[in-house]
Image (tube, rainbow, N blue to C red):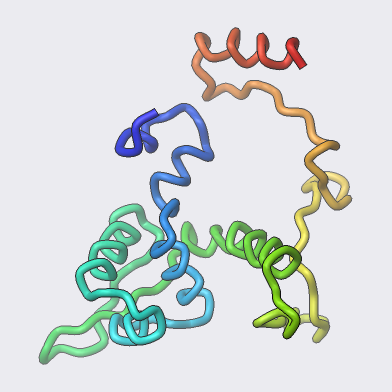
Length: 164
């Protein structure tokens, strides 16, 4: 699998990685969810070069994750706002936060705590089944080929399952 061709793979994970799969993009998304919107604020917070930041922001705009909205005319300046497509990345970011809170926090504890505005309680992000509401665990999930899976890949996937 070639890095440049990931977005053409018949795999939802590979296609997602093609868009958000580098560290700077993930950190830019973190900043977006922390309400950062302006180029200078991203650069200041992340200590990223202007060139890299510009490149990643353009990519996120091109894929419809962010939209560029002017906030000043002279000189022309823009804010970067999460689109619905971008907001839909929130569970991914929160799953990574949860993993980091469990496996990477040091003796000081979690760097950020998350409060649910509706109930006012601090929470741990967890993934639940959309049908029954139960918390999901990898060992309790079966994967089946979907309609977007190429026919040639079905035989390979079946072979791997039967080998286990």
